[in-house]
Length: 457
Image (cartoon, rainbow, N blue to C red):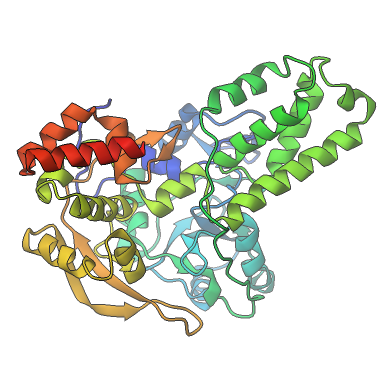
């Protein structure tokens, strides 16, 4: 357990940067500050080069994630006025984007956070929506699957907007970037409308305890006969969890089985084309299955749905005096707010508030939190639907002691989703029962809650 550290106003962490900006696989690029040529590093990206980039020692460039958490318009050899015009034509401004100086003269990177109808877009969707606009304006959209893009916010990449010109460190640049509004790709003119998908039938359960097995396979290859198909599936799922694009993951597994079959696969020797098709079929199944089920890879899951830290749980218990429905409501409110904590106001759809409590109780819980000074409601409900669909969002300000994202409650890198699971992962029954009693819960009520939480697990 790391040191319990409250995040100060104006501060973002290295873990925040890793979660939002970094694609580690399969390769990355480096370039000395005073050189023109990039050199590809055909291995996964570690923390040391990332820190070197942020310290200005040399540049690092990465490929795109399957669900990119940022996007960059790359504008080369154009006057600043023209870059400003292109930015405005797309619907970007200083409320939802930043303009950085690129390395070449009269070149700029405009960075923003994309969404599509309130959901994270895939890399394919990002490029499909902006393809025509970029072609017309003679610019490029990044990140991409095959072409590297320089990581943002290094010391040699100043932010040019007047509002952000004083930002002198990557932590400050990232903090202010995380305060920006998302840019909804559905607002881009003349792109082909992409129908929103519905959730799959029932909740998809993710396989667990697979990371070590997948890493062993990657390092050492097949160890037994008749294990090729299952091993390929395991490694592909591991790459999906790490937000690697489908085609990239399939290429990596193809290279792996050719190099490390260790003589345990007759298929790769007799019929390599059959193996290649099998890999593609497995990749299509995994990426489509979870996409249609609205289940996201770990980094995108954590940023989109939110996360909690261990010290938050006792404070949640104390804040609502051990009431289980209110603990679950506040848990979800805090969890959703964490990746959005730097914003002045957090917009939360009414449907979420109802799901976290009920139609009958969510307003009462908000009022109670307001009386305690924890949640401030700002203004009336605002329409948040699209294409005429009904929907309402509420702007809230949460007064909370937010911790660093290095303290997130995770299992195999994935933020825990429910209050019950978070309690079971961090406390023994007697420890949590004592927290409930100290907070004001009756002894018999505390015992019933303990039985309910641990029985479900």
